[in-house]
Length: 239
Image (cartoon, rainbow, N blue to C red; front, side, top):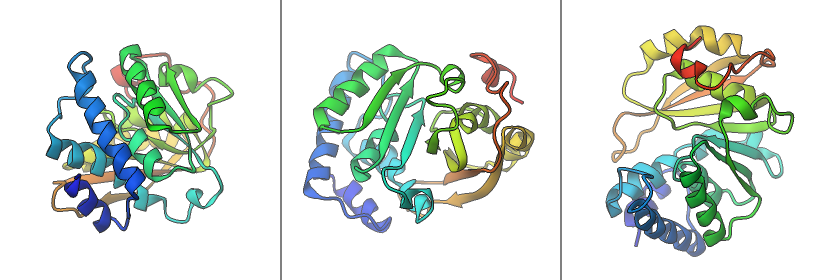
């Protein structure tokens, strides 16, 4: 049962408990079932979900190390969570974390809320909103120890959607595929303006995840109050 996930997790230094395995199994079953009615993912095979959704999400865990995650009840937000990836897998293996799962599509957040209830996950808020909007609200702006964003967007866009939510001393993690050097060079200005600094581009050395990279940003300065710009602007006109 979930052999590919278990093997990959072991290579990441993670040991999943029987309860966590049960949660991942339920997650897979409901994801595939709901996907027949709601467009959550193009990846639905048993093997691919284990690798490209679950294990892919867990590659973020080793990044956390003893930094912001050493504190009690760290707070993280998954921007553009879609069907709950990577936020729900991260919450399953980091049960002490407080989590916000954010997406602008109500049908997707309905599924995510269903899964939070079904899996018995505590200290999780599911939010239907745009990052450009909530990043200007006091309860969310510069509040998070970790911001993750798996969205297929340019890094300059991701920076504007995530860094305003990240507290000083926190980190942003953006999973990417393939070469990112050119994209990163185009995002350097945006990252600087928004108070971020590139920490590293970490290559994930797992045979089942080809060309998998994690772009990791440190939040070093407060984000100017005018950012992020209004909804849609970060994608249409990256900084």
